[in-house]
Image (cartoon, rainbow, N blue to C red; front, side):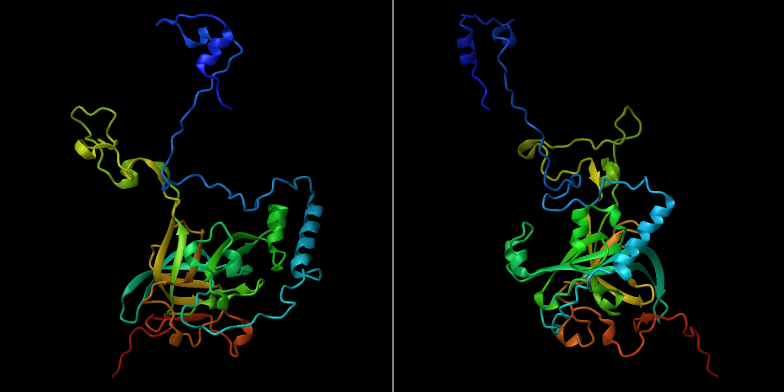
Length: 380
């Protein structure tokens, strides 16, 4: 709605007014006239971490309904019904009713799906030469393939990047099955095609069509091999709003000699001359943490097949313990899986029927020292 001009408002009043310096605009206009004033809001730069807002094309995850009125016996009955629905006699119809998908060999340029893992913490390992180094434990917890989106369909998504063309599709992976009553009906419907319980965490991986995995297929730690290199993506710890000393490591102002209430301030924000003013990207107070961080080229030193645990290089994986991270084959050109080295690589993932012998509980890299082996050998 366009605002009335001051000239039209004064014409409608049908009075001749002489405006003086002490007269206000409100006293000149009739009581029925409304003035519209433009308000300019502050525009934050794109790299500032904003509060996470649900995308409009994403379904609502959590529900507001509560079952607090259920008594203990009814609560137990509902749990039994849910267990029978997903694991018992009334199990949902298997998504594998049409038979397994065709499995293709690994070729140059193939990109497989990844998994969601729970960060447990760090520990130390030793090489056969006696060198100690730190590893991070990642547990692949209750992973299932939820859906596969072909490249031609993914090309129509808002998140698709034009330079990718129709080279990659999407593999939707979920982790940690939960009670369906925790989630909304629209969110629960996402898992009907896969025939698995609703998952707490969902993510997607860019894959090539020859590495597509059928929905409903479980993913475990045997998807990777000892000695392979992976990329791990996670979110850094959320520190909230912090000052320049904690956020950027600035020195601050002097502690004494006339300084008052400015000990932890940043000081001057802009210089003089032609480059005066505050430039884009200036280190200032703001939101610290809660950013995506990717650690590339981490080697898998050890695998525990009983508890689905990966031992990867270093303590540098971002995030607090018990947070979920994304683990996938590395994209570093010198460390990527080559076609000649993909002889025993699970393609597109590991299937139990492929194994003819029992899998050991612990798998070690050839350079890693096993604590069951003798550390010192004495010869006479």
